[in-house]
Length: 346
Image (tube, helix red, strand yellow):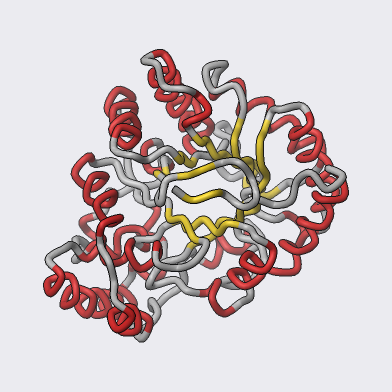
């Protein structure tokens, strides 16, 4: 188990990202199958579940809430389940062109109210509530943290996080949250993409500021959106409505170069008698203060990911993996980065 920041929340060594169950990677999973997958994860030691208000336009929160309700009704104590959700990205099911970010006080308060309603009374509160993206280059951070402080005081959330924030914004948000909570709370977690293929946070100061301030780093896409499974040979394997078709690192020459990186990892996986994905997850879990949240829609992949907890890497093996080339191609399209306020690749 890993403590999230300086809170009393004790999370499993890896969590479960629930996004793909509702959107982005093809058609949504049937609800019964998705709930069964979440419950299977919990029964195999995973207690940290990640969602957001925009996944499936709220459907993912509803789905996770129903899974938690089923667990609670079967006798599981709610405090043994950690629910993370997020707000701050603007989407509209009735206007698919509507995109943007909002970290305003009123937006954060109203978003939390709506998320709690979708998650249901069985969930009752959100353990870890993130700003999903940073609006206006951090201009609204102070009012966002004021809203978060009130939500903490109201027991609607237990801890606060940021997603895709730079070190300056992380430090400022942390300082402001401490101020508004009179020193009771600080930022608990920062989330960003991190994997053997995406290591920006090692070089841009994000991991360093998290470790300095005692903030847990939560790594999403630790398998680089399935590139690090060794199972993708062509983008044609992806569903027509899979957003990865628009991602540069899944296209053309970039994709071929990225598959060459995977071949290098395969050599180590074969030597150790485990999967490529397990090597990739084990590498992330070997990083101090980091919790990965791989997502999946398949039980076999879920159980394989969980088994990565048992894969031990020697210092020589970690050095070998550290020397691998980074992925070719950006992790989002240029249009997506512009819409959601990314500073390049962060």
